[in-house]
Length: 206
Image (cartoon, rainbow, N blue to C red; front, side):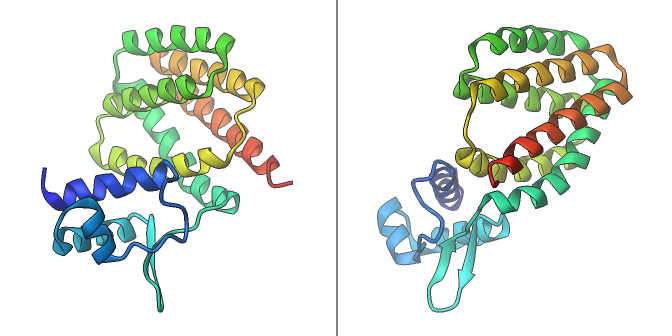
């Protein structure tokens, strides 16, 4: 792995995990010393973070970790809903049903546990399965960039067991719809899940 790629991956993970909080200054010299690489790979990594909206340039401070709040959710979902629903449509049209039937069974069991970390891991596996079934690398790349920011939003949301169980049921319906090959049903199930997710997160602001 190139030094700039390794530096970018490390900084991205620290931002997503909250170890580098919003507003943290990402100085070239400091990050170079901390990560043990020269300043050129750090400069390249910081440019990629800015391009991904994980960092911004601030006058007098340089590169800092970007802010994110629950107010950003509306903007993220404006982009997420059309992309995710199109991916589900294509997955239903092009994918094989077996993988999604298996995921549906797992989500049925997940409704009983309502454990946040395992739920998000399973949801990530479903996203990956849909991306692969959709067979559109351009769409998958756009979704991958978007999901990075959703991870940051998720850290601020309260993981209520009732919502996690409901979300698992909604994911199960998406999997069953994709497995059935019904493109419209897959879109509808995905839209319902995303709108309920948006409503839940929006309620946290009140």
